[in-house]
Amino acid sequence: MAGDPTFTISYSYDIAKLHKGANLLKRIMLLLGVVCLIVGGLPIHAQESFDTAIAQQLQALIDSAVEQGDPGVVVWVDTPQGVFEGVGGYADRDTETILQVDDAFRIGSVNKMFTSVVILQLMEEAVLTLDDTLAQWLSPEVAAMVSNSDVITLRQMLNLSSGIHDYISDIEEEYVVNVEMQQRAWEPLELVSIIATQEADFAPGEAWAYSNSNFVLLGMVIEASTGQSVVENYHARIIDPLGLTHTYLADAETPTANLIRGYDSLIGTNDYNASLTWTAGALVSNAPDLATFMRALVAGRLFAEATTLDIMLTPTEASINFDGEGSDYGLGVFIFQTPFGLIYGHTGDIFGFHAKAFYLADYDTVFINLVSTDDFRLDLIGQLEALSQLPLTVK
Image (cartoon, rainbow, N blue to C red; front, side):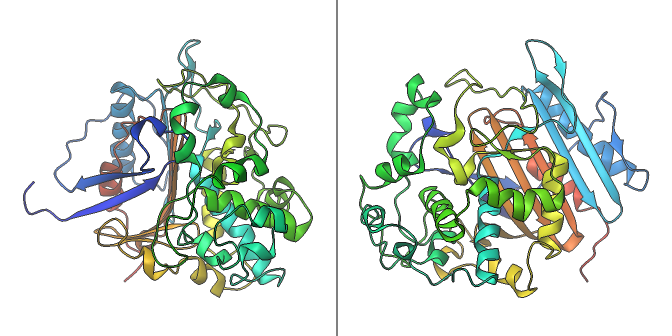
């Protein structure tokens, strides 16, 4: 509708959209307009205190997405007024297994918030500082493989202003046709070897570019600085304290939940090894766990100091308006100034799966989207319009 305000939401791609080209940032221009909502036939799950009309609108969007081809959809909305638990479609189309609201999905780059939290916790513990260089935490042999490792800081890696080339873009074409690459167990050092084949995209701090390489290298920093694996760190610092029962690092530990079937036309399989994305995107989780994580994050319960969340949400100058006005990137987190107020969190795609974990600050509302395809139809703008009917908590 002409004259309506617009805003852009950009979100990161891991290995999921490799066939779409080297640009791993997919841009969606969302036009605010009139949305006609028809309540679907699936049951609506919501606490009694959650607004019934809004629940119906959200469920209608889920039903519509499933009708348009999304195999399985979960929308979880946690508000001060109650929780909406929306679900539609199948966990497995072949067996016609009905999707449950607590089923586990791959969450792609939502993983980056977990890695960022661990680094910030280590900062609080004075194990490291954000001004440490990458070379301080890698062996000289490994550090020499990464351009500018002697001057790149951990902060620049977290906020994607390091200039380190994205290794995913170098293997995308081969990966989608090479079954051996899809199913092999990748070691972090092998990923660094791919990173080493390219020079830096720009000098550290001079620009912003989405690059999974940063978060793989930060995983190596976590292990070097703690003497423990990233799996041990995720569990000790986030998963176990929060009681996340369906969250685990795929292909790095014993699964704690049954992963549903994902659907992607390119590779045609859900049986691939996610170690290629490691600490940048290999986590598996479900909607209740992600809502718990986001609630703990926004409440500051994952940090010892109240100011640490502020640090996480402070964008580098290079990232401000990186994809249009109001789009920023903090430390492992997207930050959007939108017609719906401040929204922050992360999105992620990996073959056969899409995820969003967002916080709407003006409504004190966490909302989670999980879809079992990376080519999804679930309408984001319709969800935000429905949620904008919630009572404002920011005056």
